[in-house]
Amino acid sequence: MSIVRTNDQGKAQVLGNIAKWIVLIFFFTFTFIPLLWLLISSFKTNLELQLKPFAMPKIWQFTNYANAVKISGLPRLFLNSIMISTVSTGLTMIVTSMAGFVFSRERFPFRQGLLNLILAGVLVPIIALMAPYFRLTNALGIYDSIWALIFTYTAINIPISTFLLYGFMRTLPRELEEAAIMDGTGFVGRYWRIILPLTKPGMVTAGTFVFLFSWNEFIYAMLLTSRPAVRTLQLGIRFFTSQFFTDYTSMFAAIVLTMLPTIIIYIVLHEQIIKGMTSGALKG
Amino acid sequence: MNVKSRKNAFWIALFLTPVLILFFFYFVYPLGFIFFTSTLKWNGVSTPEFVGLQHFISNFQNKTFLLSIKNNFIWLFANGFVQIGLAAIVALILARRPRGWKFLRTVYFLPNVISQVAIAMMWAALYNAEYGAINQLLVSIGLENLTHNWLGEYATALPAIIVQQVFYIGYFMIIILASVMTIPDSLYEAAEIDGANVWQQEWHITLPMIKEILVTAMTLAMAYGLRHFEATFLLTNGGPANRTSVLGILLYKKLSALKYGQASSISTTLVILGLIMIVVIRSTIGRKSSASDLTQ
Image: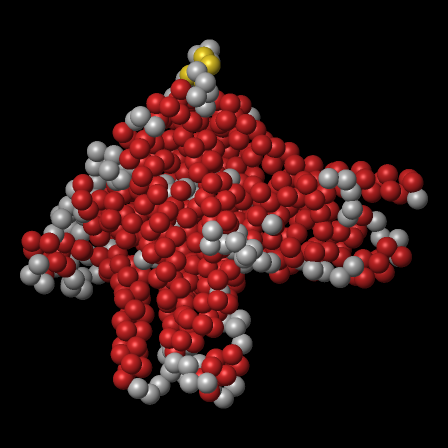
């Protein structure tokens, strides 16, 4: 690798270089500065927010964060979100890995047709299904419980998760199972002891996607629950404006707190998360 | 052998059952529900009255519906062309590995791990007329006459929400960048020896090689444009005077008013528009590429 796409020399190159950095800095500013503004503002008094919008807080108001937790009921919201996201991710992984295993390793009538049908589910604009999901949830008697969201999120993610896990399992060589079959390993044993352990990287990718989807979902959290006791984090944020009223900086503190978990996880695991979130668009 | 294969069939059925049941109740039945209900006049408890295509006809005579569908198309084009265009430009720049490119890539993607709701709340604060940072910035640099009630005025509300979404390029930039990175360096080296400058290299080597992924990204971005809901719901709820309304918002309002028939006619329109969009993309720009891999 001697010349790696270098671009030096010439006046056009200099101009191009300037333009390049303008673009990069613009998007950096757009992405990062608002978040920084929110963070710094969350430590100010409301008076400072109005009068000295771009100065550092004179005294860092950690009380805003105490207020934020007290007023918004954040712990409950976190707990609900964690429960719903974890359980629905687990369920999605279990059922789609079973289906992926059968679709990728077995032959049976209508295999391709069923697979295509399920994968075509990614084309359905889920937002269009508000009315039937509302009716269905009521008919199942789970409206306004965490199960309403657990079932809905699990089901919504079936097409994408099946797509990812099927795609992954399909690449595993057949010979792996043949030896096991010789040894008398049955159907479940092949799934549980041979294919599933090898599918771990694919499960991490799909699981990341499903978890972040469930964690960040808003529309159905709003539509399918109403009691504060089952509110998720994202739905809770919506009520901040009425809860905090004119205490803007405490509200900012609450918003910062809602952002923190995924940001921290992203800082630690960004390669994995980027892969998980974008693999829906890329093959495998 | 027969016993064994029958046993196998039992396990196959058992392993598929959970997925098939969920898929039936959450995809097949809902689609049937919206298609069927779109022909009814029904509030959820009354006796449904069959009205045929009347909802669709009155939708297309309704000003709010037409405004919403127009806004959906504005979103579709803003996402599909502006956002993808910008994402592609940044991806091409980062692929040449400028100083700090890994750090920038990570920062650009950051908003994608934060919920749309939290992001929208942040922008509501930035755009706020009394304490928002944007107006305060304009005042502090002496451009007081450029301040607006960004989300409350007819002229600025829709552009304000679109800017807030379209400039978050991280997701598509990463997808495109991953594709550009797979192009072997030797192609560029050869072009360089032949005297091709950077622009020529990008135009003649990179773009043809990433055409497929661009079409995929455009398809996804446009689909998001059709499904747009959260940011508008939280920032303006369709206002002022429906100027920022989209089909998703209208659907939610109809459903809240228990107008199941009208709501389902909007849902059906969304599903059909989505299918038309994919057909159009595949038969024009995406003809030879395996656009929208997801459909395969």
